[in-house]
Amino acid sequence: MKKKSVSIILLFIVSLSWSCSKDAENTNSNDFIFISKNKIWSNGLLGYDHISSHEYYPVRSNYIKIGEDTLLNGQKWSKLFVSYDENHVDWEFQGGYIREDSKQVFYKWNNNDEEILYDFSLKIGDKIKLRFDSSFTVDSIKNLPILNNEYRKHYYLSTPESSLGYVVWIEGIGSISGFFENTGNILVDGGPSVLLCYEENNVQIYKDTIYGFDTCFFQNTLKVNNYKYQNDFDIYPNPADENIKVNFKNIDSKGLLLSLFSVNGKLIYQKKLNGDKVFNIDIDEYFDDLVIINIKKEAINLSKKIMINK
Image (cartoon, rainbow, N blue to C red; front, side, top):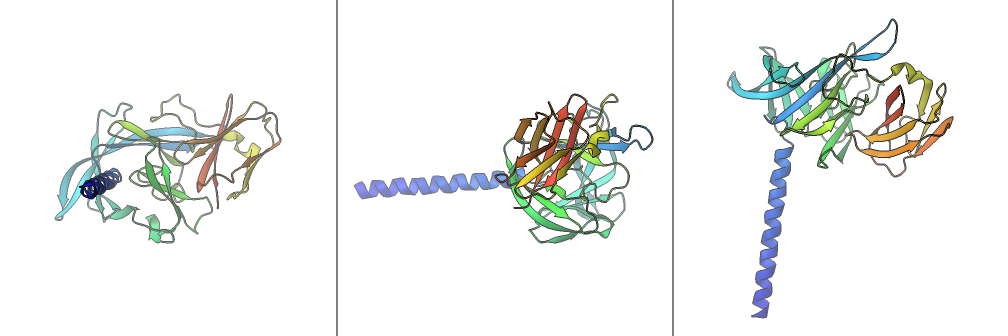
């Protein structure tokens, strides 16, 4: 009787574990679907003043959401809607369509041919052709937490056609440079763009840290980081492996707040400086492929991206 009771208990535990495992599996697969009507992307475009201030400045914002389905040549597509007001009450369809197939996301405008926007089935070392027929390589993939502490895959892609850095995609979210900027700002003419915020079910789970914006919409009075100070300090090496050095050339570092963020906005290091000419950050314990260093003091608010090679 005793053996029979033990067997029943073990069977119950195994069944319960299998059930929980299946629930977790189903939840994860649903969470990472790109096309869903419960999502909103907030995108920002920057301009650059070449004449007087030599600073970047906010130009405009928009929100993007996915709307109703439709058939195009017998194939199922979803319409893309855009809003230009802060409260994103008024939405308009401008001829954009999107579809998803086996973790690949495609888009098209009106009657133009479809193009690939994202491919979340890629593995390390895989290559993909994106806009302008440019070839990108997946250098690394990291499973990192976002604002709601849910883990998502972060894809780091590079191209030999530019030395400007990496493109970063987040599974189910897209590029941190904006909804359509699958090549980051590497192949973009004019000012850079940025994914300001991203929400699911009215809950924000991503916000921009690269440019220091703490908003989901550009107001006319909003000012961007003081880029006139960008040449007044150096951060090296880039990429880094064990240490990052910050050399303050023309800025007094006393009182500066130096912060280190992960690419999804998590604070991983912070220090108030005391006049150091060169400040050293030990990164031996950090495993992110990309970190953002932010420096703040009164009117100064600067951010730079640093790659970490482990």
